[in-house]
Structure formats: structure tokens, C-alpha cells
Image (tube, rainbow, N blue to C red; front, top):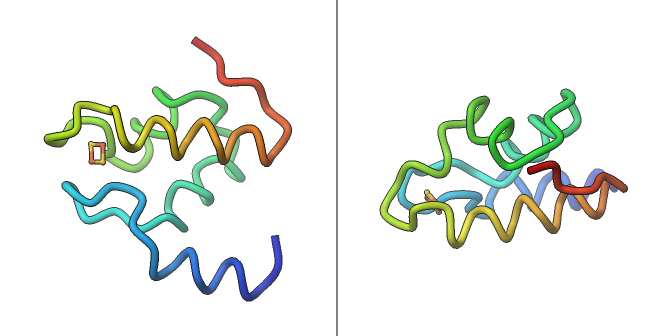
Amino acid sequence: MTDEERLKARLRPGCICRGVRLHRLIEAIEGGAGSFAEVAARTGIGGGSCGGKRCSAKVALLLAQYGREQQR
Ligand code: FES
């Protein structure tokens, strides 16, 4: 991930209902989270009004970008 992409991730939403920015999801994955549940536990996403529908798709995409299969 480039510095510009990291900067943009600081501005983009990761979970709009909890106010978590995208870079927090990335940090969780780079820190070892390998599933939606692990990212949710580290960032607080998934418990908002979307019930994980919106944010789980973002996490799945990020995990794929980092070459990880989503663990169930
Ligand atoms: S976007 Fe907030 S819980 Fe999914």
C-alpha cells in the first residue's frame, strides 16, 4: 500500500455507523487479524446498524488485497 493510499484510508469510512475510518481496518489486518470477527474485535465494527453487511464486504476486500482468505 502506498503512502497516498494510506492517507486516503485515513479519510474514508470503514464503518459509518461507528465512525471507524478505513485505516483502522487496515491496521487491524496488518496487525494480524485474518477474519471479519477478528477485525471487528479490534476495531468495534460490525455491531452497528448495518449488522456487518456493509463493513464485512470491505473487510473481505481488504483481506483479499493482503492475500488472505476470509476465515469463517
Ligand atoms: S458499517 Fe458499521 S457495523 Fe457495519
